[in-house]
Length: 336
Length: 281
Image 1: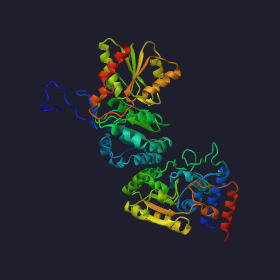
Image 2: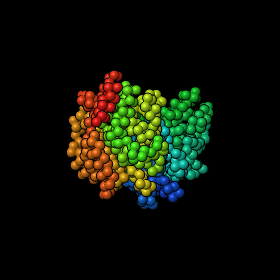
Image 3: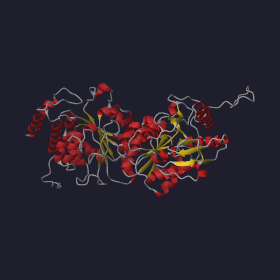
Image 4: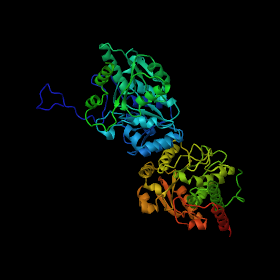
């Protein structure tokens, strides 16, 4: 927003990115509410699917499901511990709940409930959470910088970090076909469309090499794959050839693909994630490489171990090094 | 296990005594256990399993069974005692209680034990799961009911009140919850930890059909279960059971009240004898 007194050359003042309706950049191709529509599609053929939320149906695209199947939709109120306990109960009775809230509330507030009533009992509950990592500028209350670390540490839990609408549409039926608890990060509203141009298909537990290149290997998940692809294009203008290995399933990790790609000699390996550098994809890959005796030059792009600032997402993504420009800049610095 | 005929069916008093005996035998093998709680809740479990609930001992996962959800996982010793009395767990497993690789761990977990519907133990979980299961049974048009037991200390947990609100909101008339008010928590008397009285008024205000009974008076407990099952309005049902820790073993009833009551090695047999003596007319 530009104020009356500012000069035309001044940078526009960006407003706080609160409960964002879209992570998409201006002009980017998008698809609306891919999770909601995919769930409706799934529920047409699977009567055991029910939708549950804790006062965030409209903010997790579950309202699409609620409109299509009102009698299979459970509004549990703003009570996340109840949400996941009740999801366990419905799963115990043979249903497949898709339970939604924000990532902070599932991972932080309701952790013990998911740990004990869903993971320990191995209940068939699919947890889909909006505002993963740094996708809100509202401040730490809504910034789930550590959700992947927390859910990775939980036995029985499958952990997924999708990149775009194309992938989310495929993840929904894929996790329904998998029996067991799943935590998936959710992008909602107008969701970027990227991977359809890469002839990509999501496969649970599989990484995909989206682009090859001899100078640097970017291993990424979630929206950072989108950023990595953009950065790789920008790097190619500077004659730097970047490969991008997309790893949407954080757990179980596709160790074979990661070792195969990271083991190719002469490439810098950079793991890029929309997550704290503690306990996420970066450390998972680093541990794997160390354990396997594969020792490439290794760098991490991710959120710092600090409480993140409030503000506008473009500003914050620049500040914390996860914007496309910052990904490119860091890689160029490291290759220097 | 043969279905007892009416003529030779054990009385509820005998069932309760057998549950207490099974619990004491397990306590003796392990030299520890939440025995005072097991003794206080034995009458409620006898009524639940041998008066109220429908189940098939030979098929603990029978779809039409009434589900019993143990939220207070540390009462597992009591529930195992009831499951043994019900023929769901063979009596020979008593001696494995709490040992490595046993199906009877100290805290109740669904993945270990037939007839154990949920993993409790982290207190405050059970009623939320009960809400989900009750919703699930309604979705299936099942006539089965959910019975769930929790301890008065769990009323301290906010999650309990989320579930209490939710059960009324969703009109879960297939849910019967029992709260064991033995007034003892880890750090002392429950009412000194975080006051929950007047409990009946609170629960009624939250939209439940509530009865408060002496949980060690079998006739009163039977009456409460009957009324809870017969109640016609679309509300969840709560039985507030006031109980006496150590009930049935006088010297344990009088022992200084503790969450984890100390029993000396030689006292387990004395407790069993006291239990048998109390059974005489």
